[in-house]
Image (cartoon, rainbow, N blue to C red):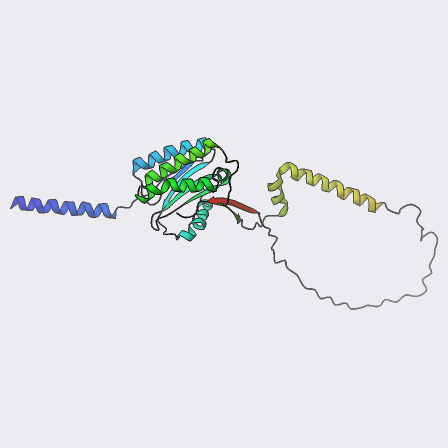
Length: 273
C-alpha cells in the first residue's frame, strides 16, 4: 500500500515539474557593444553557444572596425519583406551601430538575410555576398544555425583581412530616402558642412550686406538739387478730405511646413535565402 502511494506521489511530482517548466517564461539572450551585437530573441542558441558567438563576434568587430551582429527572431516575415522589415528594425534600435553587418534568422518563416551598413558595405560586394550565402547554406540545410552563425563571423574576418575588393560590383547596395527634417535650414547646413563652414558663411554674408547697404546709403548724395533752398510755397487754403479705405487680404500658407529632405542613406542586402 505504501509502495503504491509512493509511486503515485512520485508520478504527481513529475507531472507538476513538467508543467512548471513548460509555463516558465523563456527570456531572450542578448549582449552588445560598439563592436558586436548578439540578440537571440528566438532562443535557438544554448548558453554556451551564445557566449561563444559573443566572444567571436566581438573579436571580429574589433578587427573590422565596425559592428558584427547576429539576430534571431520569430516574426514570420515573408521572404520579399525581409530586407525592408529588418532594415527598419536595425535602424530603430539603439543597440546597433551605423557601421556594421547583421545576419538575421527568422525561425518562424525559416528565412535569413544579411544586411550591411556604412563602412561595412565596401567589404561585401556582390561576389562576396553570394559566396557568404553559399558558405552558410549547408549548415542551414541541416538545421545547425549555430554553425551557420560561426561561419558567418569567420567570413566577415576573412573579408576584412583580404581588404576591399578593387573591381567588385555593388548591386546589393540600395539607396533608401531618409525622413524629411523639420529643422531650420541653417541647422541642416551646419550639420552638413560643420561649424567652421557655417561661421565662414555667416562672415561672408555680413560683409556682403554691409557693402551693399553702404553703396545704396551714400549713392547720389553729392551734386543733387536742394529743393528747400531754391523754392517757396504759399498755402492759401486747405481742406481735409477723408477717404475710407477697405483692404482685403488672404493668408497663403506653405504646404512644405519648412521641411526639407535630409538626403538619402544606403545599406547592402544579400536578399532573403
